[in-house]
Image 1 (cartoon, rainbow, N blue to C red):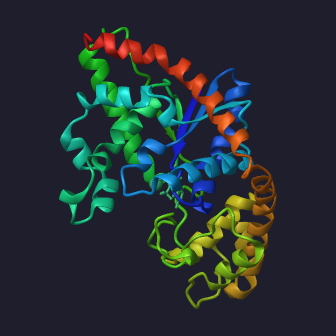
Image 2 (image 1 turned 180 degrees about the vertical axis):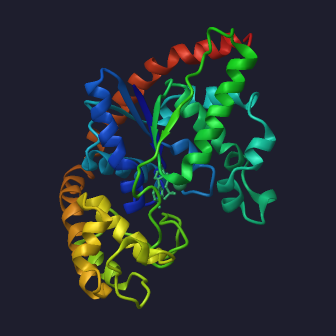
Length: 336
Ligand code: ADP
Ligand code: NA
């Protein structure tokens, strides 16, 4: 079992990152260790330069993201925790895979279409080839499990297509080089929506702070954002089918069930027939209690740049060692 995933050190991580991805980093890290496997979690700083960025801010965000991940339970003693930029094999393997990836495959990526919008000509080449770097990120370590949110499913399928074509084109049939990675998408909370718009995903790039719960939000801010979260005027239904077509209610209940482990039926049993005025404070409390220990730990860690840099340096050394054999084999397979 080899677990591999990454998160961009751009801006403050939010509840969508936490429930869609980080919680599963921790879960799979422990499963991998128990199974004698390995877990690699990296900060996707090479991905972060695909869009306009401020270099000093990127350095700061990278350290903060390490502190956040550790505060959430990613344990550098169990997980190889590092940043891509210190492991040149990611960029090298991407270049090798650029020979295999097809323009048509990348053109179909919905994230590229969303991020580029109408201005494709003005985007960086990196934004377009971003999914090939993602493929390199996981194939380099022969990933079996890739914990990601729903929005990354298409990119994972692309990584499988690239791996399969490379294996077909350049490897003997009985000796494929790359393992085909499987996405590990949580059964609930795979797509947390904006608190202001039930049809948009919660994202770091949304200009409105009110649209997301940041992991660093203090209790008053959390309670306020939940109180102001958009809802419809109907009371909560007492049965699940009454949630049909009610995106905001589904989202808030989904967050609650993901954090408490309760089922939707249990929650509706408790709050069905009542307005959001009763449910929202309960949800706010659960969030505050979830974030309290994370924030306490983050505050302890965040200013110790030396310790954070040491975690990254150690992780990078391990990652360079782990990915070396696959990178060498890829060069050889291509006749390089
Ligand atoms: P963002 O999209 O906020 O910039 P990243 O691209 O760095 O975040 O994604 C980091 C991880 O968080 C990925 O696995 C992604 O699928 C997951 N993720 C991001 N937003 C959400 C969301 N709203 N709900 C669930 N998972 C999410
Ligand atoms: Na994303």
